[in-house]
Image 1 (cartoon, one colour):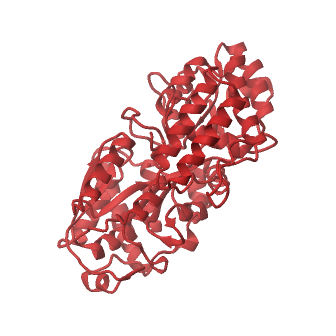
Image 2: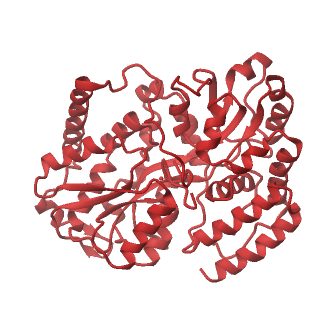
Image 3: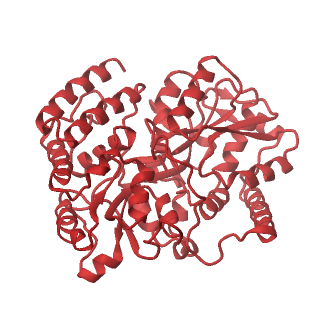
Length: 469
């Protein structure tokens, strides 16, 4: 949950540590859930529909008897009763009515939410502290996709049977983030991918199309943005997980990689990575990336775009909903568009974000936990969450339903971005890996070290890190 951190969590699986509390997102469409009494009535109808749909679809909320026969990867999962659900509080406006609906239908298996800190690093620390102590405080946990490997290898989460879930109907990249060494350890809940936001009013006035390549982006950022006295391009360039994500996207969009497919070899000291880093360094040196961006995370870069200070912005999907709401500090509502990230020779590749749901190895009622995960990851529930809180679903079908694409026109773009996105390395010590990258790349962007020296040094550091993984 980046939607962004030392762990970027998203919305959502990758969106930026320590970002301030955001206003609740609302997608610009007719018929969004109203407020007051109409809101309560609408939510009641939706949650009732979810329960009915689950029952009709053969994915009913597991009763105590049914739960006892559920099978995990290691054998039968049993144990029903009250459980807890640990999740970050940001972007969870959808959760209370869903839990209320569950609890009404399962009075002996009630779910109590435990809201973790806003900062993804703090969430990680709190979860790890409890799991290392073999605490049973948490039953179901919402995990950033980059935590699966560490939590699984440490024995903190319960292996699951892939047969329990309709994984073939989920986005393939999202499913990959929930597996470790070929086994399913979590269930995809939300997905995420970086997008390019642009001022469509400014491009239209210049007769220009959204850029598909770095050369096109740099040209427009360097020549068109100054006419409007604004910056050309912004991203997340503070020395934290967000910068690791931005750098990884640049490298893979140039045809390179950070590690080999097996993860056993460091491949960052390559011509492709050098071209990627040089592209970003040149942006700062030439001025079409503002110097202030060296301190930007997701929230700061979003604020700059909404304030009308940028022509282009790389950020997560949640920005679409936020930036579409007119209000103080937002001058771009109705004036921006969104597309996939550009690359060296054509469309680029994003870093995959999102959140997975896992069962604690120390859960006292794992059968109820399994049933609750099925409930949250069902298609009706995920559709409701999309409509309520704009979190990208993992069900492939929700990206092509006409009613949804009419409400959320950029869903096809987001689906394309997710399907071409690449996950971050499934390393047990990913934190150390990410810190090394963000620290080194930040030095290069700040003109304190050359591109070649940065990649040589970084390659040596990463080799040492993966040897100890």
